[in-house]
Image 1 (tube, rainbow, N blue to C red):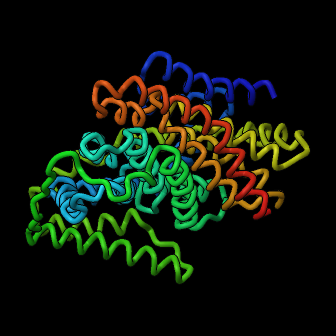
Image 2 (cartoon, rainbow, N blue to C red):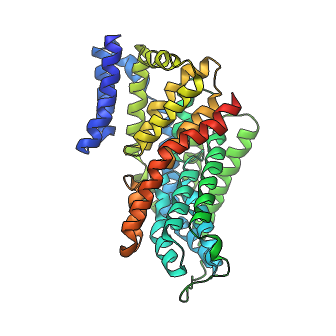
Image 3 (tube, rainbow, N blue to C red):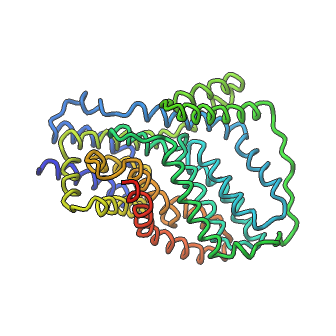
Length: 415
């Protein structure tokens, strides 16, 4: 037991040191996993590295490469401009438009890419007389919703880690739950911060968006994006398990043949830092599982005697730590902890994993996170103190409310 506790302590210490010292956890995690595996677990190096998640690496690399081409060739910016051109002068529509736009961009590989809408949306809120808090939440919830798409980072990490841990999870399930949860939060904020009063309101000055004309290469990119979605949905509906990473590389290869320059430029957009982070954490968790540390945590959780309290505790820890640390890292680290509960048949795996993922994502609206900080920075200078205060209060409230609501509405009925 001493060795297992020591390994768990080192695992937690890595997160703490990385946060306090602002170092790259992604660099430290893999060698730490190898060190713990060799010296504490007595595992050969080859056995430690056997837990390296090749499938997830292919997923992350393929998705970020494919949508990297769409960013490089201007397709993403063109789609945003086309949507804004159709909105015109209707203030009440704008928060919904930015929710949908951010969700769409966030679903294209990297959730943080959805933040490209913030420098557009926050100033437009000021011009249209929309409460900047409402626009900030529209963007943040859209980003969280899109992030759980089967083609985006949080979705990939959630169902990929669940599959690695032996929990069956349809890739579309966390996405659907994330959309519902984030729409609920957005609707509450829309009513609370004056959204209903925007009916009939328009801009304070003229706003014109030029008509967007797509090039042939951009139309091809849009066609490939639609084709990717159709293939994923169709194969999932047929009960198959599509390899989304390979599909993205396939569609990316088509685009690369048509536009070699964009294909070369998109190589730099492969999110290797996230690949290293997720791969290192999953490898470390594999070592913890091999030496019985994860089972030790499972036994401790079962000691609570109430599986719903255990689910609540796991979701609370995920939300609290994610408010200050990497959401991706927390998902990869905590999903395996649900294995004992799911294996015992006490809780539905899809419900618990979905609740855990969304609890960890919702709190990203806190100004301590990249999402919250970006929203604050893109607001007007006189609005920033108020936005910072409101986002902080909302983020900390969601640390508690997120687990309570999701476990009550999702985990409990499904079990």
